[in-house]
Image 1: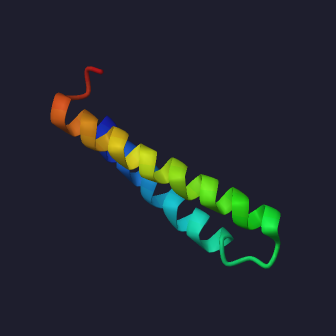
Image 2: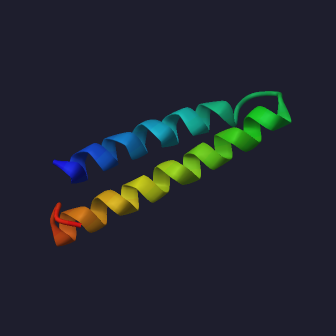
Length: 56
């Protein structure tokens, strides 16, 4: 279950981060890039949990 939750959170963060990067405000674009990277990290975390199990 943890794997799916991490992947879902990752997808949401990537989508929101990508949308923020379309802003005209440089600060918002930077926050969007950071949020997108966070989402990618959550995707990796979910993949690792899937490979090793939810016991980690």
